[in-house]
Length: 96
Image (tube, rainbow, N blue to C red):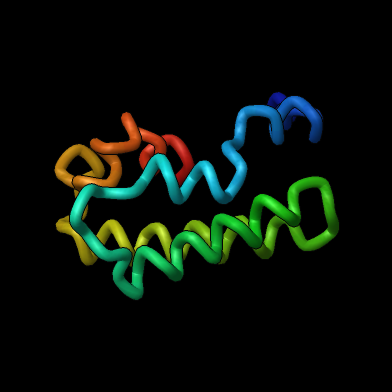
C-alpha cells in the first residue's frame, strides 16, 4: 500500500513563496533586460501565486512548470549555469 503524499497547508506553503514582486527583484540581473521567456515565467509565477489554495491551483502550477521548463531549455538546460538562478541564490531551481 502506498503512502499518501503530504501537501503543506495553504498558509504554510504561501509563507514560503516570495511575493511576485520579490520574485522579480530576486531574479533580476544588473544591466540585463527581461526577455520574453523571462517575462512569461514571471507572469506564470504571479498567476500561480494568486491561485494557491484555489480550484485552479494545479492548472496554474502546470503552466508555471511549462514556462520554467521552456526558460531553462532556452538557457542551456542546467539551473546551475543560469545567471538568474545564480543571482537569486537558487530560487528558480527550488520552484520547478
